[in-house]
Image (cartoon, rainbow, N blue to C red; front, side, top):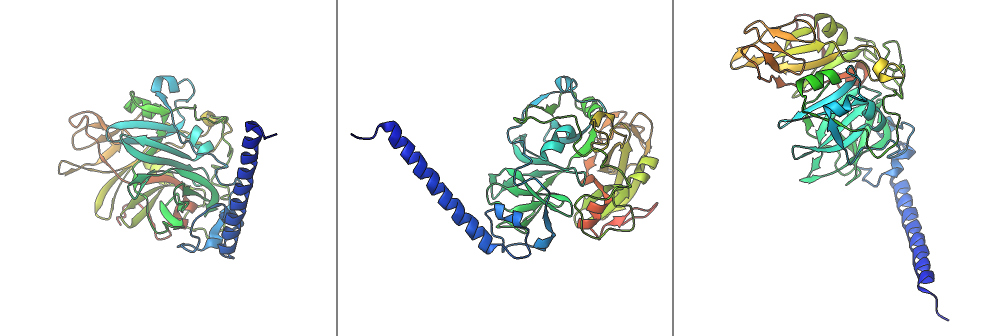
Length: 389
């Protein structure tokens, strides 16, 4: 009597499982044998060239969840501003990304649970990222050697910052710098796109036809609730941070962090919130730093919508048509240039006056906890009234 087809299929299935187990053991043994002694055991999860690295491997540490334990959003859906207003409060913070005429908002109530969104905007594959422990929101093009790749959450931290990995080579990437740090592509740098954190109201006012990342992520998470309640407190200590602290500011103070080429500068929120507009020159570029009220922190109260106010910032080159503009804060989150009397939003767009419709050139910046910015950019200058750098 011959075996039935179902028995044969079960036998093939079992043999396949055994084969996969043998391969996984072999890979694990290979990873274990090639893992440097100063590396954290969690590095074994990645099939990449450990010998290629440009950091001290002992500075990597497990953040708790394993590889992909915090799931990225890989097939994002979007809804209209009107539909999103049913579940996003006006004051809630969102990451604003405007690229080639397309505007999207990524609510931090979703990013705090996923940290990475693999998206495509106006034909450009992008990774929208947010590290809650550093309050760092950065957007990168996710094309490597001409091919789009997905990024995932590695489960590792360095200087408390999110370490990402790409799912093609499993190279590890530092979120705050966009640099490959361990693996085949170590030393490469991802191209960053300008973005900013604004309130949902500010986004919906300036981009009423924009799209908003949907809660339909494929995962069941308590969106709207803050998994890091109470973390955004200037008297706190950074989580999982073992590096030195810069005595120029409290570690958990917020700064507007500006990058122009190889020049870095920090503007304390205490200054920008007080003045609302700062004028400065960095690397020869005349800048305007805006700080408008209206957005709350994503990491304060248990319910994000009930959190303390932190405001929204924007950094722009203040040259328009050969003129260098001087700005002042008006009210209701608006700014005015003294040269033409035009009115501007925190997103750098003129909404009234002779320059209506003009968009100031965005300068790469972020709103980070000071410890994180100075950990990766210890050479960064700190703004003082009237100082150019």
